[in-house]
Image (cartoon, rainbow, N blue to C red; front, side):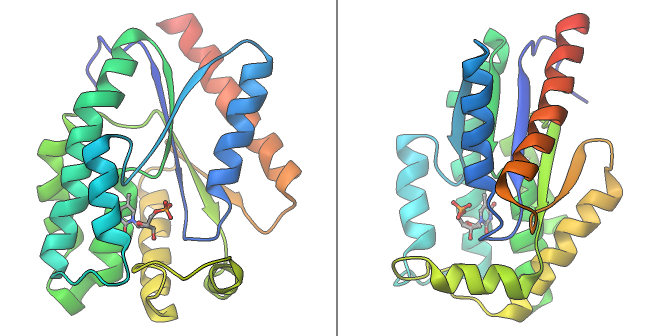
Length: 221
Ligand code: TMP
């Protein structure tokens, strides 16, 4: 259930590393901006000073932590982000574009770490429920990319792979399975897009879906 006083629109961008979601979020914000529609752009983990400090801990290749700690740290960053940034913006009526959110924890920790660390999607959900404060995206883009292509893109990027990116193809295959499961469970919220297509083509699709939900919200909120 969504709090009815949230006048804003919450759109999230998900997919395995290398899928192009960050570029697509920026392109959408620029296009809306040209039409005079401004958005709050944010990301997870991060989005607040505490969240950025947690992000450094989570992504540093030298950090060592148990799978449970990893789940709690992502949720801690999210709790701060929801209370300090997302909820206030939605209450003001803003459009919030967020580079990853709760679905990433279900996919990466719940499915990706999965049985290996004794973690389950249900455990991840239980830890995150209080952090979410009932905030749910109105629309989620899932940028779908085969794991081999994503892994190749991660390796080609400048700089060292972060602690999560260093995980192998088997991990990312489980993450992918998690993302597809989320899509199958909530096809109305989650729009799956083929991320192997040209950037401009994907950007047009993102724009069309986002514009539709913005216009619908304009008539009902
Ligand atoms: P980013 O590369 O999209 O900025 O995200 C940072 C990494 O954190 C990426 O490898 C995905 C991972 N991640 C999780 O494992 N769980 C989460 O809940 C979130 C938000 C991100």
